[in-house]
Length: 207
Image (cartoon, helix red, strand yellow):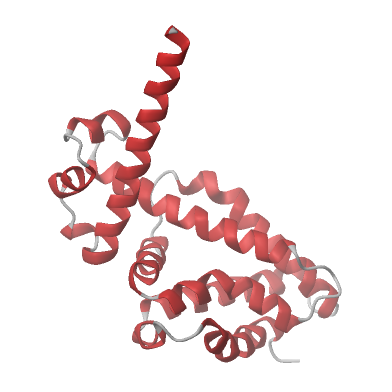
């Protein structure tokens, strides 16, 4: 019985933590870091302010964790899409997989796009603690490099890494620039049709 009560408390604590993360990201997406208050987050979740201190330590730590969580979901989606590729995949297929999470966010608009904007903006100067995601960043790079090496055997790996980073920067720019808002609610197929040749071009470079 005591173990069951412990499990229930742990589950309730995890639900509160997850709810705080979701609420923080929603307010961050709407207002940016300067516009988020501790009280409105806790009121939206239905908990007291002590819950933030207990689970995260501070409002800033909660906001950092929410953004990191959104980035991790983005990387996981990118890793899943890239993992389906192999050495026979084309640059166009690579570009489609690499950009798929951003295409979905652009097509959805609203909160999804706002969350991507938040992640892209903060990613310019990542908060302390994002080092734990280094392995996932590296996996996306290596998955892309695997295809690029097969398609562009005459280009050295250092340059292929540079092109991959440029392609990632291009996607971040799409989220932050006015064109991202213009594309909001455009069908994903149309966004992909427009975007894939551009990203594939970044991968291909000048030959």
